[in-house]
Length: 554
Ligand SMILES: Cc1cc2nc3c(=O)[nH]c(=O)nc-3n(C[C@H](O)[C@H](O)[C@H](O)COP(=O)(O)OP(=O)(O)OC[C@H]3O[C@@H](n4cnc5c(N)ncnc54)[C@H](O)[C@@H]3O)c2cc1C
Image (cartoon, rainbow, N blue to C red; front, side, top):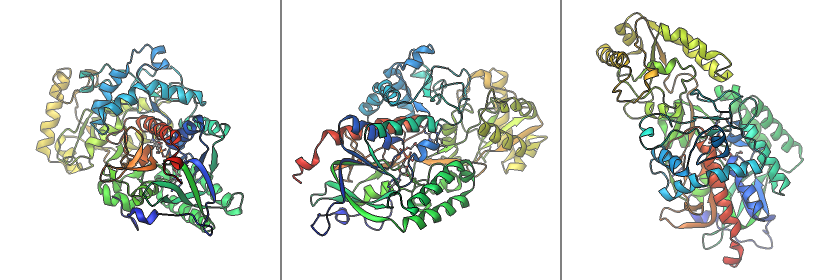
């Protein structure tokens, strides 16, 4: 569990008195207004609940910064229009392999069964998807495509149990899809009467004497005050410079200092939740202390997310007595396609052994690179022929600007070597193992990839000939983006937070990256956002269908 000043449930116990009354009340309080929060708020509002959102910053979180890809399948209208005959069963068979038992089979089945309905929910609330299918494999499609293979669906061993089907649904729009995904949902929430209170950091979950949740305490910067506007301005500046700040951490610290300045003028408010409190406050990649405690291997990576990913939502749940799991699971993204010449090379560790199928989706390759054996290290070996071919992948009909930028960096920082021995020396890899690995690979290439233990497609084999180019794509090399996947343990039927002993903290829910969910074991593009929608709606449905205030006799 994350270290915190207090982890006992008593710490949160509160009884309103005439001298300490409630400042406000709502049926459902949503803590954090990113992908999970907005899904929860919309669902609660649809169910007729008076819904209050408390958001520390301006809202949007990592979701608004993201690619906006929603992993949807089981026969969505866009899959059908693009000519794919996917079923929930087929989607389940694929995801079983990716999720490796992180949730119960019934939960994963529900996730797949409800996938078309969750897509419809997004569309009903203004998100616009499309059927334009991207025929080539890419880590993220260019603007004209809205449907693509966003995971490992077409590769072995996945094809042994499921028919390949593209499930990455990207909203129609230009650039990164996060805004196209999030902004319509937020507008829909406003239209449905959801009350949104930004610059409000929830600091405490309040529980009754029986340990059940009755409300929250929040540090609220007075609305329309100078400091609220100042806080908002820093947020807007930070969002608009996000691609700079992602790669340049000192920028973040300046923003944090400015936020802290404004937050000194916040006032504490106690707000009663009549039906439930939903923690949808993101992950903890920005809390380097928590990362050090749970997943120190990933400290060398670049945090991918928003300032809100400081683990405060997870800590709130822990302080109320909640248990955590999968906290060591971090997704490291190392995308090498585009250009499609790169996966024709070979990915080896510092011992000179091949790591995985080079065609794998970047987060899967990252997972392999970060296991015990490979210790976050990976060297991509190509030859000068592939090096030249890779330039084709820089063009805008294949790659977006950030993909071209990374490819350029890789191409021009790669180290050339006239022989395998020299290549080994340049990367500290024992030459004898590297010779053996490259010889085995070349033998496979000459045999059209037949019998490859890693299952790469024949078209992606290429006999490597000197001179070689070695590219360091390890976690600590350029832009090794990371995000956390673990969080609070929840009841998979209701979304309520569970204690270590397996009992539920009634009225306290967690969703999205604050909770353990479908994407907590391994990530493919779109799975985190799809889980936010699924878990956000699940929590809101349970919370808004229960009037805890009556059942608890408050
Ligand atoms: C560049 C990038 C690209 C990505 N692309 C994709 C993609 O295409 N598809 C996909 O599935 N995933 C993608 N991801 C990952 C995905 O965006 C996140 O995992 C997911 O959006 C998390 O959603 P969330 O609702 O859990 O958290 P968030 O969207 O981060 O929302 C949490 C909110 O809670 C607020 N908050 C935090 N603490 C408190 C508190 N104490 N009180 C009040 N408010 C609080 C935060 O300010 C924030 O607004 C991407 C991530 C990034 C950064």
